[in-house]
Image (cartoon, rainbow, N blue to C red; front, side, top):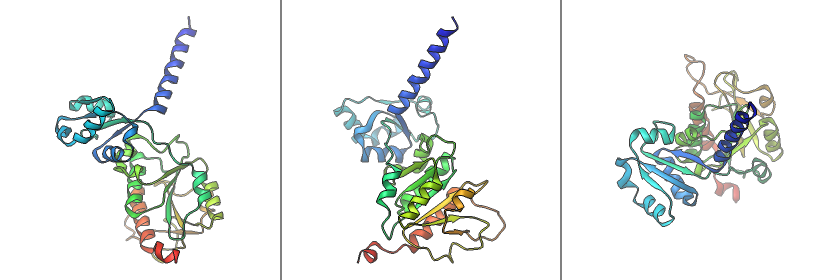
Length: 270
């Protein structure tokens, strides 16, 4: 008797795991619009509010042509479908985006004018999404995420916060960030780390390109093993009234400086 519930429970977990591999929920106006623009073939179902209906003519036409279900729902039902109240009246169930291989990226290397950002144990999905958006804004070549204890950096909340940037900037996941940074250094990439205790100011450092900047979590900063891989450690100077910045804010400042100092592609190719 005791074995039957156990089998059912296991089967349920397996079914849910299989569903996660086949389906992913995207919500938020910009995030959903970017999916429709970049990979409409991955859309499985669409849900929207009454107020959004007139704005989704092309989406509804696509669904009709491809025999995909789409439904108008009330606010409460949309909240349930999205598992969030921050859906902005637009929810899609799609095939998960297959993330590119970090090892292929390392082998290809970065061009002389390019830069990227890496995250060391930054697991807050809102921060990851906001940072991805900043990467897209400043033209970063990619976002490298050291997973730590997390299984993935990509969830629906991060995608919504990214405002469509996941469809624009490659996101690479790795279990051992120090190892990947070592391999990038072997490819001639300059590795800089953000460290509030460093005496070197971000604005005084002569950055070398290609470059990858590493940001740690707000509580503990960079791990010792990641610091060892850095060619330089820099701090973002402030007034001193606050000890630290929100991780996504710090990442935005760092990316802005990386973009400002980066050589143009036309200069490096000549």
